[in-house]
Amino acid sequence: MSIVLYSNESGKIAQRLQKIIKGLRPEDRMEFFQKIDLLIERLRKPRGDMNIAVLLSTNRADLLEILSIKDLFEDIRTILILPDRDDETIARGHRLRPRFITFVDSDFKDVGAVLHKMLGNDYPTGNNQAHHKQ
Image (cartoon, rainbow, N blue to C red; front, side, top):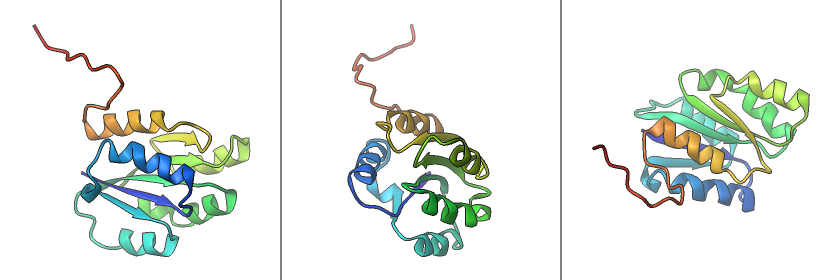
């Protein structure tokens, strides 16, 4: 499985998110897009094993751009990161039918936990004890 990450910004927020995702998936299994037109182009190509998209929207205009291509995410499990907690923003985000919604002011550990579950990997939780069946 591979992951598509979209964020039109490359600052600290996107870097924090990339760090979480890289901890779960090697870089060669992740595609990062900063321009919506490049994301559209990629989503129109054969997807192979790409079936998860993490969409970071840092403002409402960006959210509207993402929503304008929602049909391209029809067969892709999505995690949506919204710019604010306004009821209207949240309602718009739900139009994308994401598996999970969070916000840019989070630490993205919740995104890591959801991705862990989607990928079936062991997500580093800070607890290094091994769990064995007896």
